[in-house]
Each structure stands twice: as structure tokens, then as C-alpha cells.
Image 1 (tube, helix red, strand yellow):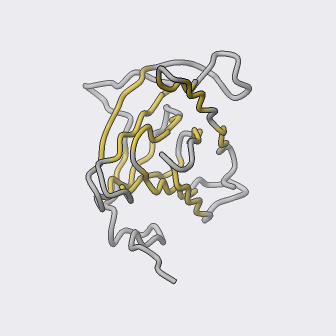
Image 2 (cartoon, helix red, strand yellow):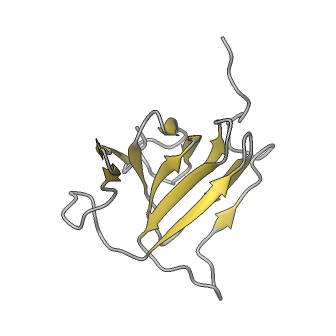
Length: 151
């Protein structure tokens, strides 16, 4: 596991009325601060990558559909520099991933329908100076291939 990354198993509580699932609590052991919550989606086979933040930690989950979430550690001095983590998140695996600042990340929708992603971040989005640094999903120096692996 990349240094600083944590995975929280999310408990889904169903009853005859529907479902409930807690995502983040202020008493979670790795909770630091709240910035904002946003939702994004991806259509089947779409990759949204790569980016990282200098100030912001992300807590990401998939509420509907399935996504492959990939992290890459390129941080100077990190004990896990060069490491890649893959997570399959969503309908079949309800987890919340803490992605520390400076760790490259992205995701690909791997379900037949649109994936709905929720991100709970430690900082508010700054429209004048966005804390977002990007590389293209394909052909960058990040050693990862977004293609499906059959076998």
C-alpha cells in the first residue's frame, strides 16, 4: 500500500425502506479536516486521470456502478515511491480510499452503466488558483496502462 493511503470498508445497512451507508465521520482515525463534498461521473470505459494536489487530501468512493481507482506515488523521499495501487470500488466493493496530497490518481468506469463517484476533500476548490496538477491518462511518464487485463 502506498504510504499514507488508507482504505475504510463501508458498511451498507439495508432494510425494507432502502439503504444507509456512512461515508466519513469526524471521529474516523484518519479524519483531519472538511473542505467540501462533490460528485462526478464517468461513462463506461472513460478514464479520468492523472492529477494530484499539493494541499488537498481526497476521500473517494463510488456510490453507483464500478470504477477502477488507481494511485501512483511519485513523491520525493517516500518509502513507497514508484508504487502503484489499484482498487475496484463500487456496487461490489464499498470502500472509501484516503488519497494523500501529492499522490497521482485517477479512475476508469468499468461498469456497463455510468459510475457515480463521491469525493470528500480537505480543502474547498479555489477557482482562482486550483490545487490541481495534471498529466494525460495515456502516454505520460506514469507507468500504468488503463487497458483491461483479461486472463
